[in-house]
Length: 42
Image 1 (cartoon, one colour):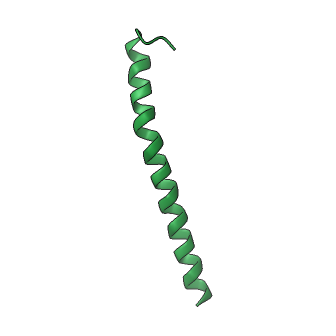
Image 2 (tube, one colour):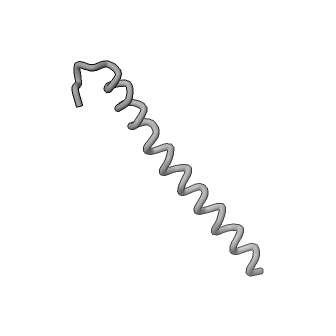
C-alpha cells in the first residue's frame, strides 16, 4: 500500500464504508431468515 497514491486512498475509504454496510446487510438478512423460519414453525 502506498499512501501517496490517491487511488489507494479512495479504495481504502470505500472499503471502510463498505465493510460496516456489508455487516449490517448480513445481519439484516440473518434476522429476516430467522423471522421466516419462526413463522413456518407456527
